[in-house]
Image (cartoon, rainbow, N blue to C red):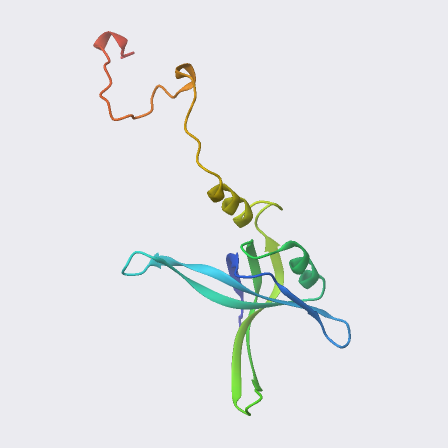
Length: 150
């Protein structure tokens, strides 16, 4: 039998860290994982996958990951059920993570992207000598046959 899940995605909110009555750390979070195709309107869709991680990796995830962080999860898929307050049986499917990898250096990623979006784009005020001579500005390039090396 084989039950292995490997995911890479972004956290939808900060991990929720709790402790069992016996003191074991458990963190839960939801990972948004893009689908490999776009829908009919051209929008990128994502799956939102619930993850659970235990003990020291749970504490690390809670300390170092936050909403928007890119994370890799390696674990197994598990299902469980319980009765809710109305007495109805509720089924839950989630990834029980054996390891969580931080896919970005601290201080980068979504937070940095958000800061860049907030900043006003500045005009390109480079001197003519520093501008790219091969940039396509929409004008034809005047090159004589004598300038070509072949």
